[in-house]
Image 1 (cartoon, rainbow, N blue to C red):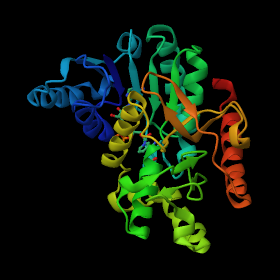
Image 2: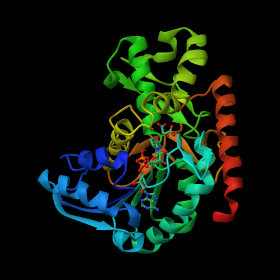
Image 3: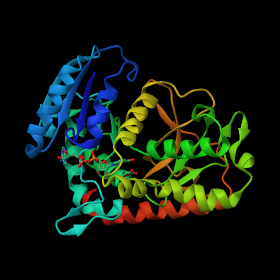
Length: 328
Ligand code: NAD
Ligand code: LMR
């Protein structure tokens, strides 16, 4: 199994790579060949991380390789985890980066080059997870530049779903594992829509158990939508440990069949389901068969409230698409 991680000397990768090396993440029993990619200026830092990975003596790992060139790194790759990019919450070229969409022009270019390399050099059944922000539209750029319909491109919304599960478990005093069918629709941005109306907790509808629409609309929704900013404010840096956990959970969710009665979360190319226009990467409730097939779960019933929120986030994705039309 050849696993590529970009941004490998960054914060997220420092947690993500060790998570990926634990047993049971990949379905295949094959050992992992890690291919860690960085920009030339960060190669020395990456070498330090590699020494730590070597010292961890993972029994799952066959080799650890480093690259400052994406083309060589992705040759025959089974998975590409595209983390490498600039986070918000910093000053870049004299301008404060406030929203993830402010990163479009800065990070977009990274994904044209990486998309082209993955499309032509990685395996045809390669799975690609875009973590770098703005993740949905970066995935759109990468997907178009890859131009390889057999590969499976996703953007990460798992972190939003985990955040929603954590808040819901506190509200209903249940364990996160008791929560089924929680889906995040739309963009990984403050417009995202985490739906509770189709969520099941201990066999009962979560929204009905909460029985308080104002909590859902005025407390829960903004909490999940703005959680990334809340963490940047508190930590002075964007979420890393939880983002790594979510990226690893996404890999595991794709590699193994979804548990019965549940869904998993990622953004994939819309086919028009739930009136989300085709041609944008949107969060959906998904099912994996554990053999590389991922499909949208289509039986969620959406209230007028849910539909109005989903329309807002879908429109934002259309606007972002328009901003990068020269890159796709
Ligand atoms: P970081 O700055 O700590 O690390 C990013 C690394 O990427 C750096 O080491 C940098 O040198 C490297 N890099 C930049 N351009 C590259 C390129 N072209 N090829 C390879 N490597 C490159 O940032 P981080 O905290 O690890 O966050 C990475 C990205 O993930 C950011 O865009 C952040 O906003 C995003 N993020 C997304 C989610 C999500 O839920 N989708 C959650 C958290 C963070
Ligand atoms: C997050 O949701 O924590 C990340 O997307 C980082 C950010 O910019 O909020």
